[in-house]
Each structure stands twice: as structure tokens, then as C-alpha cells.
Image 1 (tube, rainbow, N blue to C red):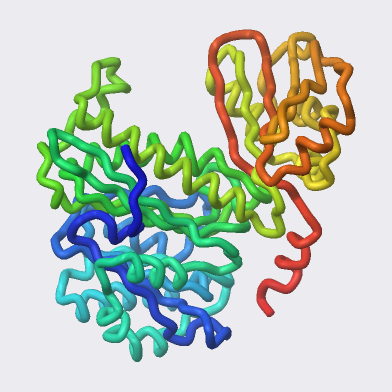
Image 2: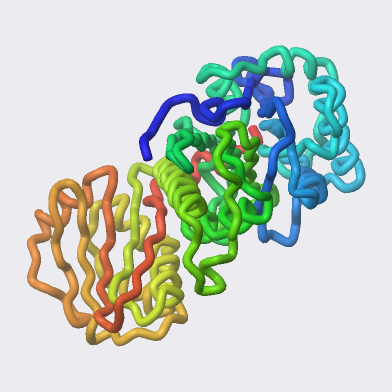
Length: 416
């Protein structure tokens, strides 16, 4: 596997574009994006677990049931959530407008929205600019970047990646872009993620792979404990690579050996999802650091994940990371209320970064350590909290960030 450029335009047969249509108040920012495949694709998606779902989620959830898509239209600046029948009609109209411009079936189009909740989505800016959006489609990196810029809200960094693998002697590419900075918590963090691939793969296999990868990446991401109404991870595969069609999706669940093609594809897709997860954690609203919490030596993966999520979500742990304070007691506290069963007397905690590693807790009690060295380690932009339970062989990692002053500033005046 090698990293390449081009994002969602890297796989053969995909185009992307983004424009400013006038949904956002800021006259300098793009706010309407389109991703298009020259041929219909096998497709799969995972949506928010929030009971309150945006109109875009409801419409896309219906359209994806066929296992086929050919395009995604997305807007920023307005979530089109909690907008009732008017919102559903607006989301449906977006697919119709894109379908007419692209000359394809509207049922082959997914729609996504992100922005302020509870405000009706203005359709005139989209109606008046849909052809301009189609004309902005490009099959190069600029097309991808324009589309990516058009879905960003409070993001301060672009989040994109593309990789190339080989299946049956054929080069296969996977490209992706994502937005997400705040209202992020496991079981679908607040985010939009669009993944393209030219792999030939059955929609059932694609769906299984995406759900497994999401569980091991995006659902292990936390910024602030809030899960949005609009979250969506969507993948389209057009088969242009010409590899033997990837099948046998549920082999791992049945305890069977997976086909090589599926294993290769899955490994690359999980890598793409994990890298995007780290990018979103690093760009958490008001964040200054990427914080990885890794739990090792657990009895089972579920326990390790439960503990890691609890520690990564703790506001007190986050603020300690922001202040470079080796307050390991907050880590043990978050472990204690996680609900997972573990033996405190066997627990060890260390902090790690490029500056080194320092153990601060051993056997559930303080370990002799240098406060100066610990602070030096925690001052780095990427730090890891290592928890050793010494009760088994399982492990899990969760990605998050620190909690700084700017989080309140950003969210205190978000609508203005």
C-alpha cells in the first residue's frame, strides 16, 4: 500500500467540484460540493445514531438501500435538521436538481448537509447554481480540494487521503475526504466522510467492510461528547480498476479465512478511516493536541475500548493534557466510572510523546517520576496515554484531543 495524491479524485472514473452558492454568510467560503462517478457504483453508508436525524440523513438512508449510488451533493452552512416536512422536501429537491444536471436517476444520489440546526435550508442558491456546480467537476486534485473546502465549517485543516493497493495484479485506489471538528463523540461522531474507490466489490461486501472499519476508527473518536444529527460516512465503488470482484464479506464473522482480495481491500480501507479519524481529533474545536488513549492487557477488546473511551472523553483528562499536567489520578478516575471491570491494583499508566515516555502510575498508585520530564512530554502536539491492565492480551485505542479556552469561544458564538 502506498499513499498517493488526489483524494476522492484519485480513483479512476471519479470527478469532484465545489463552489460558493450563497448559503454561508461569508462571501469568501465555498458551500456546495459534488462528487460524481461516470458510472453507477456499488455503495454503502453508515449514519448517525442520534434519534434526531437531519433530512439529508433520512433521504440518503432511503436511496442507499438499493446498494447503488452515482453521486453525492453536499452543502455546508445549514444542517437542514429539525426543519420538518420543508426540510425533507429541500433534501429531496437537492437530489432532483443534481440528477437533472447530471442526467441520472435521483435515486442514485445521496445528499449531505452540515451547519446550523433548526434553520430552513434556502433552495434558491442551489437552484441558481446547480449547473455551475456541475461545470466545476474535475478529475484532478483541485476538484477534490474545492469539494473538500465546500463542506468545511469550523474545520481549520483539510482532511483528505488517498492510497493505492494491488488486487489480482491490478492497481486499486481508495480516496477520501472528511469534515469534522466539533460535536464529535463515538457511535458516529459529527462528521461527513466521503470515500471513493475504483475497486470491483459487491455492495454487500462493501457495506460489511465499511461498518467494520467505522467501528474501529470513527466510532473511536471523541472531541466533546456531542453526537450530531447529520453524521454520515459513505463509500462508492465503481469497479474501474478491473480486479476480480471482491466477495465473501462475512468470512471473518463465520470464522472462515477471508479471500485475499477482501483482506487487502479491508486493510487499506481501515487505514484510510483511521488516518481521517486522527486528522479530525487533531483538529478538534479549540484543540492544541492530538491525544491517543491506548489500553493494553485487557481481558477482552470490549473492556479495553470502554476504558479508552471513558478516559479520552473525560473533560478533566482533556484539560490536564491542555495544561501539560501529569495528573494521572484523573485517568484512574475516568477508568473507575467507565463501567468496565478491571483490577486497579494491577494498573499502570504512562504518558508518551516524541519527547519520550514516563510511567506515572504503577499498581494503581503513584510511581516515582520526574514532573519536569512529564511536562516536557505533555507539551508536545501529539501525546499518548498508555494504560496497562495486565489482565489479558486484548487492546484498543481511542483518538481525541485536549480541551482549551478556544472551544468555548468557538461554540459560544457559532451562529453569529
